[in-house]
Image 1 (cartoon, one colour):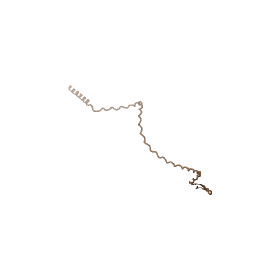
Image 2 (spheres, rainbow, N blue to C red):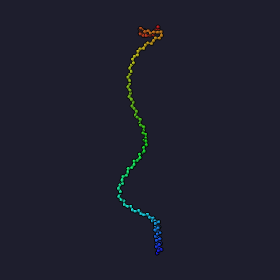
Image 3 (cartoon, rainbow, N blue to C red):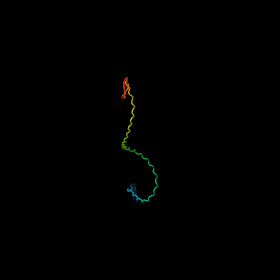
Image 4 (cartoon, rainbow, N blue to C red):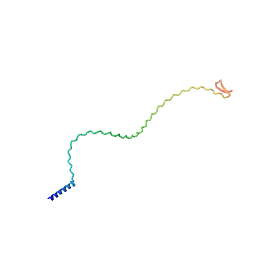
Length: 119
């Protein structure tokens, strides 16, 4: 009997070792989820965020179109005609031309004409 007990004990140890080292290849079943409790109180308000950086300057706009040509002006009015100038005074009668050398003046008593006559 001692021999049988030793063999049984030996088989039990070997079986236990095989189970420990080989392990059971089945994964444990997850536990069923617990019932959810009531929601907790709201947390405190967070701090204010920091100010953002300034944006970049925009691109330069496009040049505008050229303006339209202006309207043509109206023709001017015709000017007034000036007054006619006054008639000038009658000039003085000039002196008679001198007689050539060797002659002198002579007034004809019949008609009052002045002629140059030989000396």
